[in-house]
Length: 326
Ligand code: TYM
Image 1 (cartoon, rainbow, N blue to C red):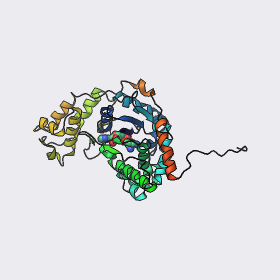
Image 2: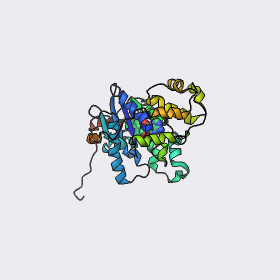
Image 3: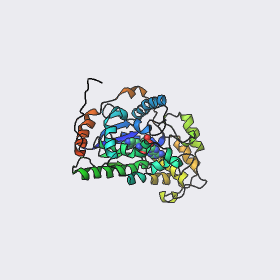
Image 4: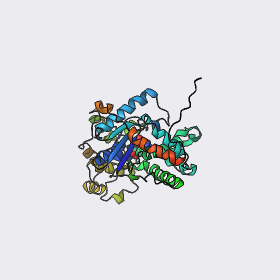
């Protein structure tokens, strides 16, 4: 059984990095795999979220996934917090993962920054919840952008340790699928930082809900260097902005980075940016109506959770204490 699990946080709008690094690959893999696509709201609350905005964003992100081509009739699209198995398995995995492993996670260091002591415990344990998301469904493949690679390596370590500790081949080791020429889309203002929903500058990213004029303005203002574009990807070393623009162009035009280099060799970045404007972005405002399509996932996740509980020595079923005085 080849099964995909992947997720996205409902924080702000989907941007071009989410699309090229993840969602477009989800759509392309849908015919080959059984898929679960999840709006991971429990991950979002590891940092402060306004409650009303979080609710609205959860619906908005699901709608954007469907508008980008995720088939919610054929596959499972759902909200993480609506399936209790994620949090339950995450606790079991908290007791499997080692502190030393989590201490190495670069995303925690980046997100907590200098205020580490003030970060939530959830932010620190975040990768264990991500492992639970994947392992609760015994997913075999996980399509993500480059930034999630370290979390997936941790997921494999956790699965391996669980299987070894309890002598059961319960969890498959999931394979990351990091595909295409734009696995790490960088900010349009600074080629050294990742395009992200949390960047203060709107000009750093292209949102999937931006209209054509806004996209045009953002591309025209995108930072690059004054040099001419080279004819091989190797010569982009040390030129992060030019590499980013060419990578995005290649991904949108559905060609390799080498093909994009050959097409624009000797031109300045401005010429390349004019070409971008001729390419099509999916319009995520198209089908919000479908966001009401949730299919229950309990059937699958609940099949595996009892086996993880039993292997760990927990009683297989919930036993409720009853007292007439309650
Ligand atoms: P999140 O919400 O930050 O991003 C969702 C997906 O988009 C990819 N991505 C990018 N790809 C290329 N360039 C970028 N600038 C860029 N920014 C984001 C991410 O790699 C991701 O694939 N921890 C995850 C969500 C998650 C998850 C999971 C993913 C929770 N549980 C289980 C896979 C499996 C996250 O914060 O993604």
